[in-house]
Image 1 (cartoon, one colour):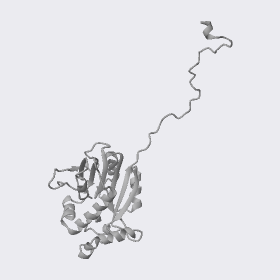
Image 2 (image 1 turned 180 degrees about the vertical axis):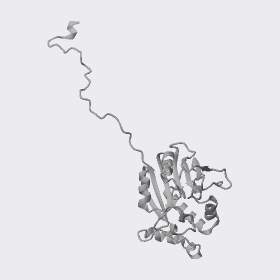
Image 3 (image 1 turned 120 degrees about the vertical axis):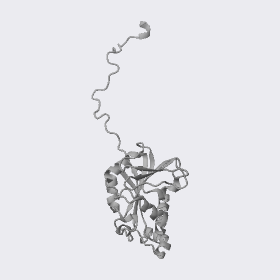
Length: 252
């Protein structure tokens, strides 16, 4: 079940905790994709808190928001690029997307397989996608005070297995949001410190969110010659063999 767009907007833009989450996730995304110059970048679900840094240099930025969630105009003070769409029928041409960010889209989808097929369809050759989902082993998926407490959380192995089944090749992953999902001042002020500790002790500590980067895997076309030619083409068949002792120039 998708969250309402108003609830998502209020969390990320009007709450202290949401703005802290926005910064942590966006900074991590920028480490993975530092630029998108000349590329088509698409966000699905509620990915708009992460897309603003790419507006200036990307060839095109589109924010897709599923119908059950609702849509809001974005970005503020600029030409709108957000679009309300069907969950599994996006208004995008096949193979024209270079980068795709999915946040608050996969775990809340009632048709995850069809959604991943649509993600695969719109990505072009060499395209990459980034899926951001709640971590089943983290604290953020265990309560409903943040958007990461809704839908189906994943373990890393579950997420990567599902992506592979839909012909995506996982390339790298990150865990983030190591601070508790608390609005208390202490946790908010020390959030960056906990992120640093969590990255160094990720085997011991479980981040609240998983971020997995994948590439579109395109299989080599099947077919071609399957059997060797049994008898080579005899291009000189039918021509007479040379006769010994004759000089062709003298006979002319």
